[in-house]
Length: 366
Image (cartoon, rainbow, N blue to C red; front, side, top):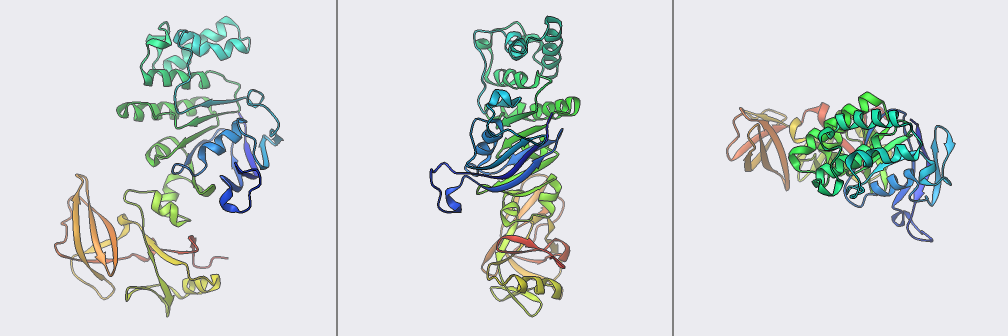
């Protein structure tokens, strides 16, 4: 097991990068602590797989250092780093049995026959491969092959970390949840450092204790799933996490309020001061659909909207409302009556977020 420290890390596929946009990974400092279960989450092209390949040694970074337990490993080959990597598509030896596929890395390490049998059967039991141990891999389904591929990474007890690069892509949807839970159980049982790359926020939150959300080659927030949902530190986190994502509206500020389309939203004097200190015109407010209050009657501080659409999703409803020139989403419970034609809403102060240059600011921020 290992603590993985990324120190001043950056990578460009260009020989001579000239600006930030030329980097697939922008200057980054980050730590994956020993024994943690982490998700590396983000959209396609944000740098997730590049970062994973740098950690494993398949790719050498343009700048910075990778350290395992304080030791720099930049010049070490993948096989010298003691990293197991499971790829998007299963990598198995079709001519071998499931048992021999799982045993292969252990035989290379000269494990005893008894120890190999014990480890292979232990992992086969966890991944529900016990009945397939003597079947050749070329007779397996795609999801069975991927379980074997994962098992090869999990069977070694000397690895520094296991890296998963979107490993459930080829798995049938009804099996994905079970396999995510299996990986979680394996982590809890063996206390292995695991980093799981995915573009699916459900996969990330199901598997990981903490999520690193990537955007344009940077980790813009690192924390528990609830933190990313309730307190997004960047507008992209608000947009990407949640379904629907956060409502984000460009505003101007002054006289203790945010203003858009002649609509005023009160802000505290302390928050206004922090905004003014940033000296930027890129100011936005954000609030999640779940946290907007829908009122039966208008109040002094409520806002009146036109109801454009009501989508009944069984356990909840999503309202699409017109507020000024903005279309916003509101989520209400299934037993709450949806407003007709007009809706009165309010933005609770504790859930209203303010962003300057895309980053969250708080009252009393330094």
